[in-house]
Image (cartoon, rainbow, N blue to C red; front, side, top):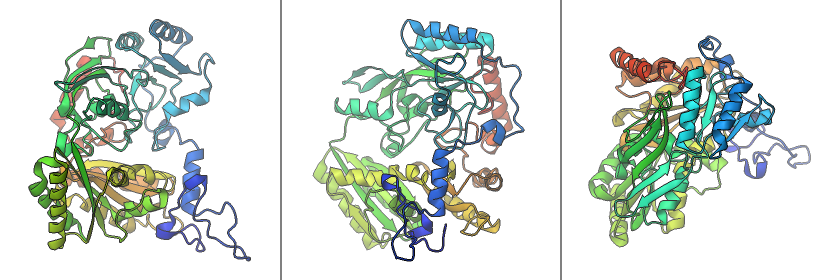
Length: 534
C-alpha cells in the first residue's frame, strides 16, 4: 500500500492502538523495526486528525453567503448573555475575546472531518424559554441559525456553512420524569441517547432506539431524522414511539404536542415524550458468516419466520468492513474464517431458555440448508456485547482508515440492497480512482446496515478528500438509488450534502409544497439556511 515493504494485511490498514501504527514492519539492515514507520493509510489518517478541513464555503465556492442575513455585533452578544443570565447556559465566542477561538472548532467541524463552518458564536441554552428568547431575537435581527445536537451526522446538517449562529442543545439534558405504568419518558432533546437508556434500565425499561453513536448523539437529533437503528425490527423507528414533542419556531413561538420537526428545518425540538418498552427478560445473539448476499436474504426470511415476535436485529456487514474492524479495533471477530458477508442477529423476549433454544434451532437450520458457512451463538452477556460492538463500532473504525471518507445513507429494495456497493466499486475502477497506484485516492468501498428496513450505509474510504472523487460519486450515487426505486436518505437526513439532490427522492410538487411550508413558518429563512430545501 504505502510502501512495498509494508507487511500490513488487507490493503495496509493499520491498528492505532496506544497511538502507534502497528504496521511498523519496514525493517532496516539489522532486521529491526524503526520507530514511527507508518504506511500511507496511517499517514493519511494522522493527517486528518491533525489538520483542520477546508471551510465548506471554500470547498463549494459557487455557494455565496445570503446578503439578507445580518452580521453579529457586540450588542448581539450582550443580548444573548443577558438571556442566559437567569437560568444558566453558556456561550462560546471570539467576538469579545471571552473564549479561545480554537474552542469554536469542536462546534464548527463535523465528525467526518468533511465540513467546517465559520461560526463565531455558539449558544448553549438550558431551557425552552431561553431558546424562545434567542430565536425571537435572531428572527428580528435576521441572524441565521443552525441547531446542533451531538454532531454525529454525516450530511453536514448541524454545521454552519458560513457564520450562522450555532444553538447547541448539550446543556438541555434533563430527564423530567418517567411513568413506570405507561412507560412514557419525558426528557429534554439534549439528553445523550446512552444516558436515557441507562436511566431507563434502572427503571426496568429500555429506550426504543439503539445506534452506534449512542454515547454522543442526542435524542432530539435522532427524533429529527427519524432514526431507525438496530432495534427497529422489534420496536420500530424512534418517530413511531414519540407521542409528544415540544419545539420552538423561528419567531420564538413555543408549540407543544407536535408530531415531527424535521432536521431543525422548521424549528428546534426542545423536549420529547417517548413510549419506552419494558426491559426484555432475555437477550440472545448470534453472529453468522455467509457465502453470498442471496444467502443473506434467505437467512433473513428464515429468521423472520421462526423468530418473529422476538427478533430485534438483523444487521448486515460485508467482509471488507470486518477486515478494517480487525485492523482498527481490539473487539474479537466472533468467527475466525472469512466470509463475504456477516450477519448479527439479536432476539429480545421474556423467556431466556425458550428464546435461546429458538435461536439455536434457527442457526442449525441455516447450517443444514447451507445458507451459512459458520455461526456463533453468544454464551453470555459479555459475548453478546462483543457481537453488538462488532456491528455498532464499524462506522467509527472506518473513520480511522485514511484521511477521507464519503458516507451514503440510503434505502433500497432488499433484493438489490448491496448492488450499490458493487456498482460503486466498478465505477471507481473504470475511472481509475481506486487502487494502490499513485493518483488512485480511493482505498475501498464497504457496506453495512439494517436489513430490516432496507437501510444501507455505504462508505467510500479514501486517503484524502478530493474533488475528483466527490464528482465521481455525486450525483451518480443518488441517481443510481433513484433509478432503483430507493430513497437517497434513510436515517441521517438531507442536510447540506443532499440538498442539491432532493429531486432524486421527491417530486417537484412535493418540493414546492415543502418550500411553501418553510416560507410560512420561517419567512425570514433564518433556520438552517443553505440546507434541506431552504
